[in-house]
Image 1 (cartoon, rainbow, N blue to C red):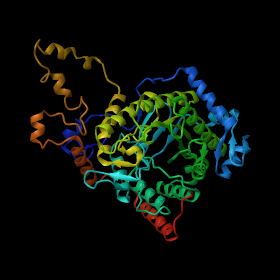
Image 2: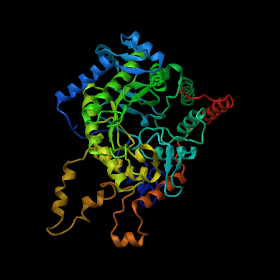
Image 3: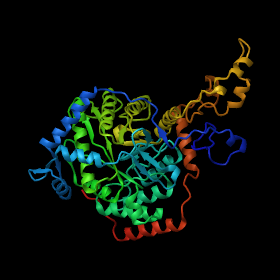
Image 4: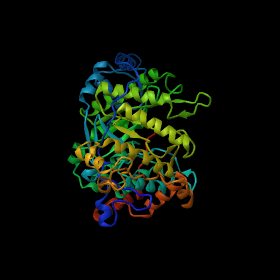
Length: 515
């Protein structure tokens, strides 16, 4: 069995269980998914080409403000023009050369090969909600993100095979910023064997994070530099600005051969034009500038295209997600990604303030925009609330249900002679039933998806069982998971060396992030 989950009876598949039950487990692979949906268009091909050309014009004629001098030097050395001290005008030829240089397929290596992630067009990779300053659950309420929340959410991410990468989840605000990279690396490496995330908050923190990863995985410097073992997310400062930490992150990760997921965060009507086409033109220009910088730092450096474009509530200015405009922007981004031929990242998400029907609707609508757009990586696919201010334990569980059902759609549906079942049709008399048919008895344990959170019992049975709604049931599931042992086996000597490294760095004062 390649997925681990808690059944409605509370048993975790993949743990100790009767042999007969294990032999009847469904053999669906949730770890390496391919998007089964044909891509959907929102604009005609000529309009997508026009948006791409407009983005190149923005870079060539208007330029982008780059606050890091090292990044400006790389752009100028590559042929860009420097105006007004920090505004870089990037020629089309530079962008085109970068798109040729950037790889279209990236194998990112996790702690074990079965957790490896292939970043390429057609792949389908899910991440839970990320980067939130708060966490919430029904037991403890909403609070600033803590170290314990970070650890809990890493463990929940580890538990579900349909979540493929560990994102930043919540900010552990009870851990000082000069020590936070130690904390997040320690628990990603020891509580999960999935691809880890490293914050881009200045070269000293990044280099120490690389060192912790290298030594814990038992890698040489050459192995680390020539293969991908981690990733970061780079957000531009829309409109048309690249700040110091993000520009430094692009350079640091490119030089180290680790993957940058470039993601302009453009909200229509706020930091981007109010139209879908205008917002995508800006986002595309910023993404192309960042991709170009990685290739100037190291030709062939692994990088993925990304967008996160939605609209705002024009009555309040608050971000909105899971809207028709968000859906359309994802589709357009997919068209642009296919035009340039790179793997790309999009996002679901919700602006709801608690895990309710609005939250579910918005997340699913945003998710389907990503699926039909052909996104390689879908972030904020589980647990994200308040436009990114909060990750909910319960919503992570209820959203995973949807992701697992999507993963089921990625699997081939057999239609051989046994599935067509002429024998079963002949066995059952007209007006009869198939409950006891040989085909049913052979397959009833494994034929259907077994829900994680949904309760399919009738009203009487549901009432007799306590009349629990889905959110309440989700509380029981995450509590059950965290009460167990979700951590992978780790090498004791490497774990001890990691703790020693962190203790020594902490005693030396850590590394302060670059602002």
